[in-house]
Every structure is written in C-alpha cells, then in structure tokens.
Amino acid sequence: MDCLSICDAKVSALQRKFVGLAEKAVAVEVTGIEVFSTPTLMLMKKWHRVMEAVSRIDKTKEWIQCIDLNNDFPKHFEVEHSDDLFKKLENIPLNRESRLYR
Image (cartoon, rainbow, N blue to C red; front, side):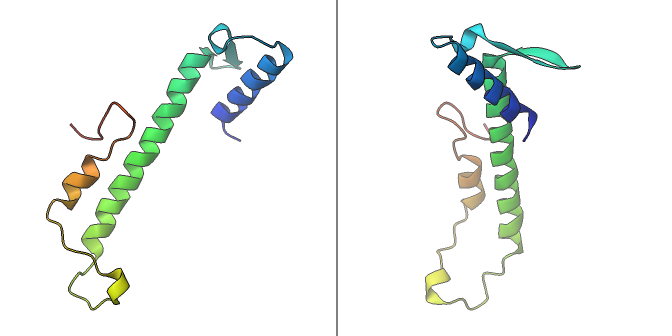
C-alpha cells in the first residue's frame, strides 16, 4: 500500500470514529516528512493520476511509431490512417478543465 492510500485510510478511519468530521478539518502526519491537509493529499493523488495518464499517452505514441501499417492485418484490426493522431492523443482531457499539452 502506498503512502497516499495509507493516508486516505487514516482519514476515513478518523471520520468513521467522529461522524460529521469534515475532510478539511483533518490533517495527516507522515512521520519524518510533513503534516499534510486532506486537500493537499487529494491534490497529490490527482497529480499521480495525471502523471500516469501522461506516461500512458507517451508510451502509446512510441508504440504507434513502431507499427508497420503496410502489413496485412485481419479486417477487424484495420483502422483508417490519421495524420493528426498524435495531436488527438495530446488533446485527450486529463480532467474536466485541462488538456495534456497546450
């Protein structure tokens, strides 16, 4: 279990113990590192999700360059060639407000 998951579990346990306790009223100490508020922990979690998405998109772009589209593929694998495929990948929204590359 990673550090953020452990922090989430601790916040949830505290909220079960004290019903009605708002997340904004809770902070978690990671021994030897820092004390983090729950909004900070949520932001960290979102950052990790975005970085995973960026990594997957980068790997997809590398994979696309390795495919030889001149090979014969079964009909159900055939797709139309798209010159703007990389642009489409770069414009995949990572959350409601943003795009990967601007």
